[in-house]
Length: 327
Image (cartoon, rainbow, N blue to C red; front, top):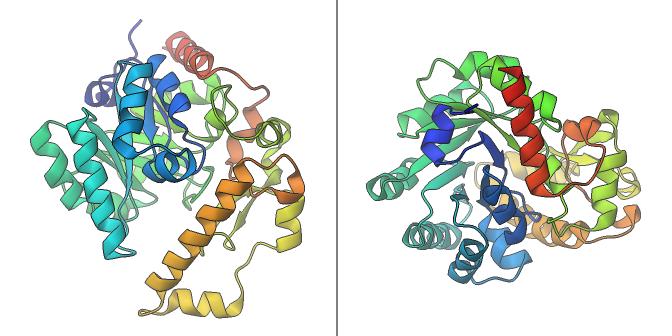
């Protein structure tokens, strides 16, 4: 039985499931394994180059050697610096040259990405945590929306999956549910709710092909929903993480000076760039940490439904079977 949706047609995949882009956990083997199984693996450029050590074009070609199926790319497009945006433009152009045709944009106005991608026959989906961001994405010409809800890992949104679908569902583009989907049953429920697909991050960290430490993966398996907390000490904005001993010791709130600088019109971009650099280094080290005392481990509330470490292909297969059975 087919699982065709507007998203599967846009992405050219069989299963309406995205292995979401994650810094630092989107290693190329994981991305390729998800795509090979019929879902869409999405590469995260900073993870590919900075964490896993691949020159960008060579990294894409390495993944193409692991699967002939489509892969996507994440473009974080917040204007934190001119140098960063120039590098992102270069990455997008290289990705297009290497055959990537599905892009997920985050944290900025995606019009310039659309203008680059559409002439090449590609599509752009944009992260949205509420209607105003979804509307801005649609006005910029995106082809779909990633509805990041309050159950997501990383930078979660404020709304429930139901609230977000109600807010975004009438904007005329496919909407993907992102957050809280850790089991085949939850995936099937998202499709039945009316979503065109689902994006999972935490579930794929606890995958065999992910190169995160075993301690990180087992922490996800052991964690309950109540173990997920929000901290703004990593990036300056709330990030969902497992409440490890390290997080408990460090606290979950940025200091008063940092909060003041993040609110300032002239200082907020500098502070965000500073936080991004520091967070990149911290998360890179933490993803390989074998002791919870050193761990800053991003995860969403889907941990409640993740009970074992599985190959990415098996995750995709189980999700697809559940969705077909629910039809």
